[in-house]
Image 1: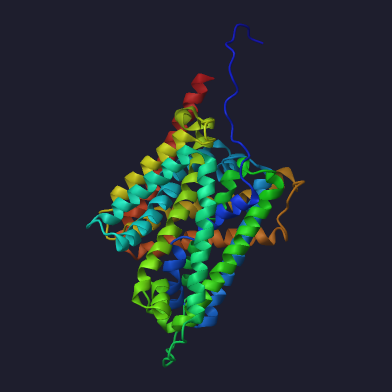
Image 2: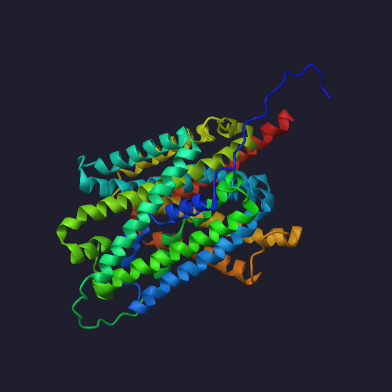
Length: 450
C-alpha cells in the first residue's frame, strides 16, 4: 500500500434509472422512424402479391426477435453500459472492440443520426421552408437541440423519449385507422409480378433496425438481468404488431399496385382518407418519428464512447461521467460534432439520407455479425449462463448470423450498382480501417505507460 496518496472521491458511475417501460419506449423510438414512411412502397414493388408483402413484415419481426433473444443472453452475461463494445471486447479482445467503438463513433451511430436528421429536415421543410439548404439546416438544429437535452440529463431525455414514443404510436394508430376506414381502391387489371423477396427483406430489415440499441443502456436498467429480456422481447413484439397494422392499412387503402407507385405512402393514404390538407399532419407525424429516433440514437450512442474512453487513454476525455444529470457529457459533445460534420458533407450530395445509408451499412452489418458469432464463443468458452439462455440454441443464433451475413452482402452488392454512392461506401470502410493503426498506437502508448 502506498502512503501519502491524496484522497480521491469515487468517480461518478451510471445510475440505474431506466425502467422496463423506459427501455421499451427507447426501442420503439429507435426502430420506428423514417423507415415505416419510406420503405413499404419499395417492399411492395418487390413483392409478387399483397400476401407476400405482409409476409415479409412478419419475417422481419421473426428475424429481429431472433436477434433480440441473442442480445438478451449477451446483455444478461454482461449487464454493463457499453453494449456491443463490451460483447466484442470480451469475445475477441480489445483490438476488435477498439475498432468497433471507433467505427461507431465516426461511422455507424453518427452516420445513422445524420441520416435520420435529413429525413426530419426534409419533412420540416414542408411545414416551414428555409430555402435550398433548409433540410440540412433543420437537420443540424435537430441534432444540436436533442444533444442539449441529453446534456441536461438522462431523466429529462428519457422522459421526453417516453412522451414522444407514446405520441408516435398515437400518430401511427391514426394513419392505420384512416387507411382501414378509407374506401377500397378501384380494382386494377392484375399486373404480372415475379417479385424479389430478397430485395424486399433488405428494406424490411432496415426498417426494423435499431432494437439492438437497448443493449447500450444495460448498466442503467433496474434489475438488468431480468428486465433486459423484457425490454428486448416486449419492444420487438410491440414494433411487429404496429408494423403489421400500419402496413395492412396501407394495403387496404391503396392496394398493392397503388403502393408500388407511391412516393410517400403514408401521405397518399391520408389524402385518400382526409384530402390534401392532411399532408401537413403527415409531415408533423414524420417529424415526430424522426426526432424520437434521433433522441434514442443520441442517448445510446454516447454510451459506447463513454466505455471507449474508460478503456483507452487516447480517448480518456470521453470516459468522464457527469454526476449532474447522470450523463456522459464529453461523449455527447464529441458525437454531436461528428454528426454535424457528416450532415454538412452530405448536404452537397444528391440525397443526404441515401449517402449516409451507403456510408454506414457495410460497417454496421460487419460488427452485427461479429456480435452474433460472439454468442457461440461465450458458450464454448464459458458454458451455459445461469441467467437467460437463448432458446432453441444453436438454431436461433444461426438464423441471426445468417441474416447478418445476408445483409452485409446485400449492403455491398446493392451500392455496387449505384456509382453515386460508391464514394460513401468506400469512405465508411476507410474510416473504419483507420481504427486499426489507432489501436496499435494506443496499445504502444499503454505499454510505455505500464
